[in-house]
Length: 318
Image (cartoon, rainbow, N blue to C red; front, side, top):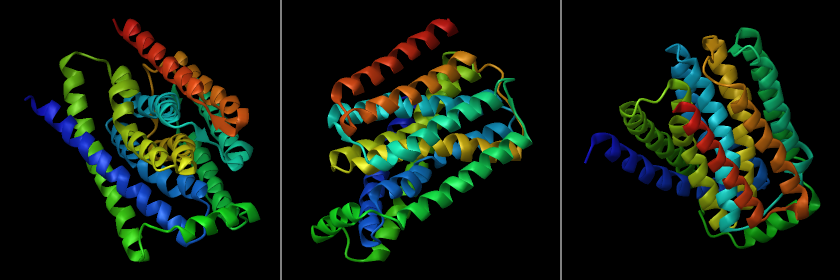
């Protein structure tokens, strides 16, 4: 068996194990602290599963591989919505928390537009990075302030879940499980990315296409595993919040940090790629708004969009 294939398999196994630990630990901790699971999904889980993207984009920026750094984020955001939410809703229609509709999804769309404006010359500099980081700081503060203003309905639902508490009896076990889940996810992503890049280079793909596809999918697999596991465990707030929070963090946090460390030249990333990211972000909103649920047919539409985008990339690269 080629070494690259073996690394991909090891990576997938570790991602699955890490995602299971992360969902169990974070769900349990959210209930114990009486914090809404949607806030946990938007912050702790979202930022944890985005760590592979952070590592890859920062390393790429330092190595002057701007197309991979930008392609990683753009491709990951497209994959997160079109494939992860698409597949998760095909497995189980996802109930939508009103908080996601009122604030977080619009913030995700605004962040995507802000990036599109900053990246119109296919470059990101120190000023743009500082602005992006400032926005993510405000967003984090907003979320934790919002967590303290949980509605009476949310508190009542959490009391019911606490009464059915079946995960951990010790808060230290929850924290260890979350940290272990993060560590396993990052390790799994490392093996997966390393194997995927080796495999992609064998078939002669460009940096931009590698970033938009192999790297983007590889670094998004923690989100895929986490959201699918959360969906199976009937934790839609974590499943959806994970994706919305990850997409916001990918643009504002990851590109903000990477750009402050080293200015990014994203030559090779086309305007069409940015338009696709904007399109799936905007399309998601009415899907979530309709009956406060992402239905199976809407999940199918999202997956179909991604398949079409992959065909476009394949034809453009040939």
